[in-house]
View 1 (tube, helix red, strand yellow):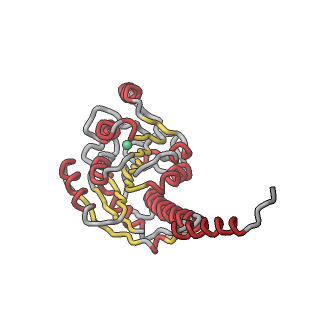
View 2 (cartoon, helix red, strand yellow):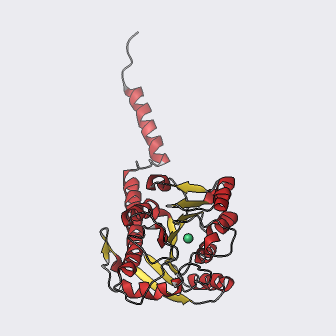
View 3 (tube, rainbow, N blue to C red):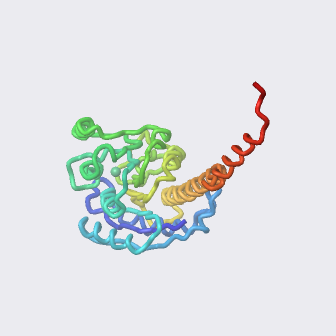
Length: 288
Ligand SMILES: [Mn+2]
């Protein structure tokens, strides 16, 4: 299984806590300290191609650069933001059937910033193709947009599992509870636990065609800082879930092929029929 890692150092529209542009540097440094063996998967068996960082200053350039960089690799894109607007760049490059957004916020404001990214996705892909997960904060106007467009909000991994098609996953780290992940652009209480997010990812792992992780705003460059480790671990866990799901799909396919009854060639069928007919002829007929 191949992955293509791309950092997107863009946090121009971040408002409350800036610093997401530094996240790719910190998370890369954390990777070297993490355990490779997760969920029974050895990630060192996967080829992870590092495509470097996109450092463009405005969104139009970010979109173009992400497209260029991703076209250089056949690996499944793992994008590390950056603020949440970078999802637009990833989605435009990958062109998925569905986008699942795990986020504390609805991000449905009428804005070009990080708080309007879901609204833009809904406008581009249609309300049936964008799914919100873990959302717990929305303004009055965002609620109106969600209701009038019937934006899908999903609450359980079982519901996510029903999706059929190529899925792009966007993980805003603020979907996690601040007790797990405090250093994000806009922390919100009453969030999901690490295992709740991990289970939701597992539910769609076999359909994922790209994943982005956004809004991690490191407070210092200490790569052993707890939040940096959590941010990196979630990326590794997601990659392991993807590898595991692909293996399971392959094993299932092999099992189905092995169990499929062998097709009898037409010539053989005719011979069988002929033999049956001759046998009938040879049998003594019952007397009248
Ligand atoms: Mn967001």
